[in-house]
Length: 133
Image 1 (cartoon, rainbow, N blue to C red):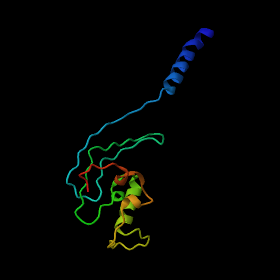
Image 2 (tube, helix red, strand yellow):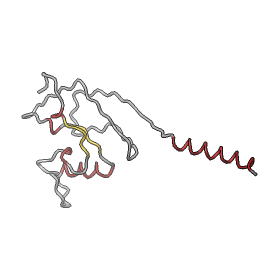
Image 3 (spheres, rainbow, N blue to C red):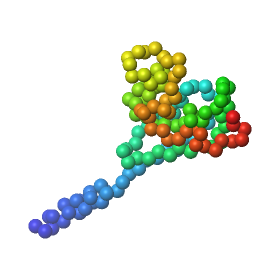
């Protein structure tokens, strides 16, 4: 009887050890953007678990503004869900209005100021190169 339990106990022990090993995946992307005039640049849809992490490194940053004063708080990186991106984009185009009017606002808001996105950082938090203006 004891011998017949031994293979089952070994299998159970193996399954417990296998279940306790955590798995992870990672991806590294390098992207250079220059002379891009889009209001929002979507890099890639990706997903991670609730305990997952994301790291974004920005280097060799220089920004030139053609109209008016520069405001680094209007440039940055954020994480949205699929649903919140649609709502944040709508709010930014309609000045944050909660009514059902679909007419774009003459004074659109920055999507980084939306409550529907999680801001990772803005460009005013970066040390820009001296040539950046």
